[in-house]
Structures are given as C-alpha cells and as structure tokens.
Length: 332
Picture 1 (cartoon, helix red, strand yellow):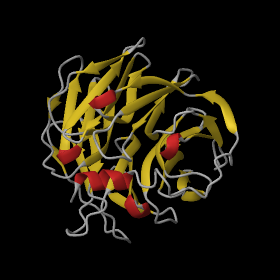
Picture 2 (cartoon, one colour):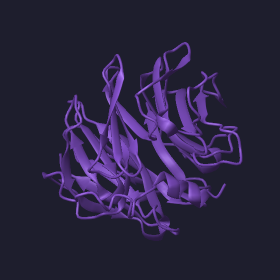
Picture 3 (cartoon, rainbow, N blue to C red):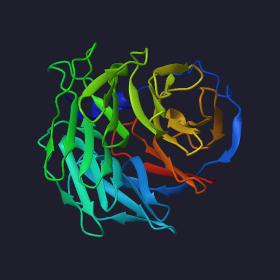
C-alpha cells in the first residue's frame, strides 16, 4: 500500500470536493485565528495536546521523519525525539507522555526524561493514542484503503509493560482502520474509525455501538460519559453526539470533511477540518458558527484549556510531500 496514497485519502477532498458549497453559508464568529508556528520543511502537524497551558506538545513531520515541538507558555521549540517515521498523535496522563505514528511507532516519555521507542508489535500505522492513567493506554490504527489484504483494524492496549491486542467483537460492516481513541477512564474507552464504526471498552469487554452512518469517523472528544462528540466525513463534514444512552449524527452539508475536535467543559465542541475550517458547536446540537480563519491550509487537530488560548494544527497534507505545517492560535 502506498503510504502517501493512504495519508492523502485520509485528508480526501481538501481541494475541489466541496466546490458546490457556499463559502459564506455559516456566519463567521467573533474569534480570529492567527498563525503562531510554521514548521517549514520540518513537515506537517497532525496533533496538539498538553497537560497544562505551559506544557503543550504538537507532533507530525515528514513521512520518513517524525518531529515534535513543545510550548512552554511563551514560545514553541523543537523537541528531541528518536529518529523514525511520521508521528500522528500525542496524549498523556500523570507523568507519562505518548506519541504514536507510522509503521506501528510508539514513543514514551516519563517525567522530564528522554523519549524512548517502545515496541508495539505492529507494522501498520497508528493514528491515535489515549492515556487513561500511568501504565494504562490505548492506541489505534490500520490501513483504511488497502484492498489487496484482509481488513486488520488495530486496537492495542498498554498494561504498563507491553502493548497487546485485546479480543474485539465482530462488526456489522467491513472496517479497515480505527482512527482515534478517547475515554473517561480505564473502564470507559471509545474508538472510532472507517465506515462509521464505533466500539467501547466497558472494563470487561469491547462492544460495537451504532450511530446510523457509514461515513468515516476521524476523531472524538468529550467532557464525560454522557457528552461525547465524534467528527469526520469526507466531501461533507459530519458530527455525532453521544448523550449517555445513544449516538445520533448529522451531516454538515455546508462544510467539507472534519478531522479534529476538542470539547470544552461547557460542552461546546471546537471542530477543525479541510480548507482551514474552524467551527464552534454549542452543547447538545449540531448548529454551529464558523470562526474566522484567513488561512485555508488543511487543519487536522485542535485542543485547548478552558479560559486559555486554543491551538489548531495542520499542513499541506493534501499535497505531495515534502509537507509544511502550521499551528494556529485563538484567544479564549
């Protein structure tokens, strides 16, 4: 499978697929995004997260050269990580920080120590990671568009010593990849992926859940077990909400595909996607405001801390490499 083709497919339709959409269909909001970091030839940015406002991480790079940057409250600086392929996602908990990427790559940092490569036993790309507690983490991945091999969507669990695959339920559809993982604790972990697939770990077993769609879910976030938002879509964006009992979804017909979501404590979902889209979606529904962003570079991830600036990251992933990356900042 051609790696470039896969990543391009995951960022599908960034140029041209929504040409029939009205660019002024949603009123621009009062928030203005501005450029805070440009990576140049170091590569695109795919994920941003941090344990505090003065310790924020963003990861990405080029296909064969993963890279990371750290924000210390005053500025961004390049972080030293082991050599290896593209890094796709970052998350941590306690004193443990995880980064995952292509070719089954996983890096771990404990406290202020150096990053170390941790063997996962996987050769497929890992697209997401979520840490519930030190010694408990989950990562997901797979090859979303391969046709010459049998589907092999990846979920792996870190038990403090090794990564291993859990027993998964049979799905009601063919899905080749899980794209992101998020949860509220070790006994409530949710993964989303291609063909509208959702699965949940309840502390005893994994079970499939349905949202009434076969469109790809690309990312998810929430405030608790009864307030979770997943986003995705390709030519048109999509959002789904879980209210503690069931999933429901809506197609965002005036927007292109959505790649990233972060949910503030009040339930407001902040969503980013193709063509530099940045949406603000109040709790409980699917109405949204499109925030002002003069840069139309593809956005892949978003994250914030309540009352502090938000960050969104992306880059020229819809073009042939070498890629360049961008990090935007918006005031609270």
